Image 1 (cartoon, rainbow, N blue to C red):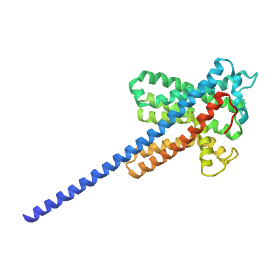
Image 2: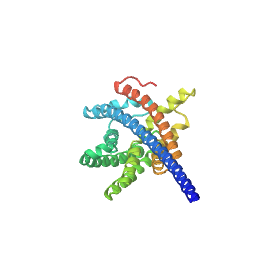
Image 3: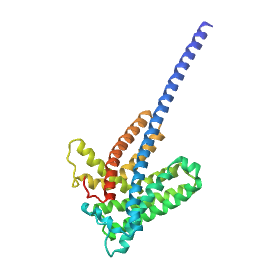
Image 4: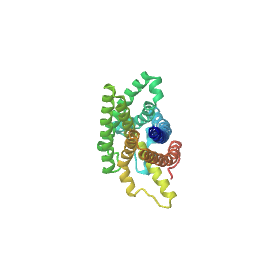
Length: 297
């Protein structure tokens, strides 16, 4: 009888310890999930702020220039080797105007599509805005093909290839975004919508990445220049890196490993900080373009 009592007490003690261990693991997992969630939120908010600042620039510079029929001001970019406005090329100028203004629509409307409270509080707006967004990104991809290969707006063949790959990704991701929505696969729809948003804004990531590279390179004592290999690689990296970051987040969210979640959070925070550096560098530069001042770095 005494042995039975001892065994029962021992079993209870083991059970209590096991329960304590399980509780500790659950607490660690909950903390890791929270860290990952807020890391992703930090990433998204930084993109949101940067995108809406970019939207202001696009509408103030390109939008009003079209309304006022003053498209010659686009050539303020000429000191950097870009001449967007070509006199007598109505088709090319129109394609560029749509491409620029369309990027603004994507920057503003695309971000709204990813905000959960907007989807919940205004489902009809979410649906209408979604259709506008999808039509815009479709035409954006087509105008990108035209500008790269017909008008020759890309600085070199590598840039044109990068733009074209990005365009095909936009078309493919748009298809899967619509397909999963129609099939009511909401979890998959959300993932494809995020991927579409990232590749649709590749030109913004391109600019932010360039300024981040120039600023961080200078801060660490290097002498970054426009002839560096980074620029050729970033032609593709501007859509590959954001997609890889999103995929890492999807992977980390689906795993129960605490270490994977913390690793994912560290990567997201690091990329976000680098992106913030680029945003803080790009925004004053765009305001300089808006003001008509000579371009300087």
